Image 1: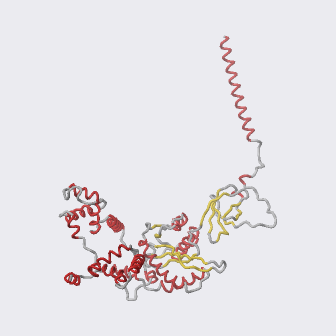
Image 2 (image 1 turned 30 degrees about the vertical axis):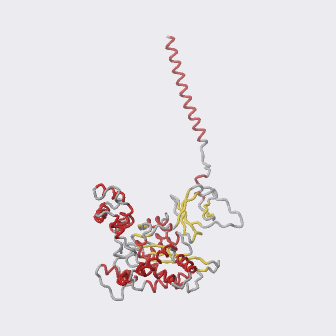
Image 3 (image 1 turned 90 degrees about the vertical axis):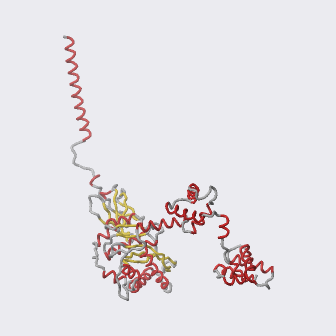
Length: 475
């Protein structure tokens, strides 16, 4: 016994043994009543989400060998007794087979090894071989992860940064803070829609909205383009706000490409995700301010964005230039500085062109009263379009005025039809349906008489020909 204790004292105490000891330490009190010991054991098992049997299994080796008895037992001797003598060679060949074809299953590997004479039929067990492959890093899940990482390295690098501004922008929406509306008295959640330049990390536009709709995306895109002009490509996730027909149509009109990240690939949008960490800092501070309107929230946000984020040195910019062997000043470079020092020129659009590109559009039919209906409101249009299918465009923030488009006509604006005190004068019928007073008689009757005359002439000729044949027969 003394020799065993001396041997244990020379061994290194494992972390597992220490954790097990801390778990059963309250049970080692010799003065503890047996009944209370049972209750304490159940309590410890419940708190640590293990069974009573596991705790008793820890107590037994502790009583026999002390704290060193709690160390995990080596299975080397157990395995060496039951496995073939050349099992290490078998494992090496199994790893080689897995490297050759990563999709090979353990069952296929056993089939090959037994067929090549590495082991007798029925000697190799699937569970044992699979455990050794996992320990060597060639398990099924490990190989799948390795395959995904390899494919991602082939298609693109893990980190990227465009060399110039406006070559690529990233857009996303973030859940924000709650604001208490003064009018309704209901607390609403504000959502932040943002667009960031991939190279400089400069924010093209970022604004809070009370609803997470497609409009908050369209509005931010429109304001960013009006402010800074054309960007080559916009990179977004697959959220419903970014896959609408309207945003694709608007960007297509302006020659902007839309690309979407693969599902569950947040690392590909690292610029905007890193910016959201700065947003979290603002949210923590904004909770200390009693904000009751979205305009007030945006006012604080614009000040924070322009004076704190844009003028603070950015670690991502430093890492980018460091990877290219370029040394930056000790104070670093802020997103605003990197944006302004870029040599690529900005390309601006005409404001009217941008406005038209982001207008919403619908198609409808003009009713018999020369009116169209939109959002439950009637609009008066030209009477010549009665029954025609027309397209109208509108700004969702100002739906009171819409523009009607019809082929062959100049677009014209219409306003909601008011309800007057008296009935309006009947409108003049469209020229296309007006009755003409200048006529030369009934064209239908004229055609019928003309055909009757033609048939009469044909019948007359047929009778004459018949009489000619009868005279010949008599002769």
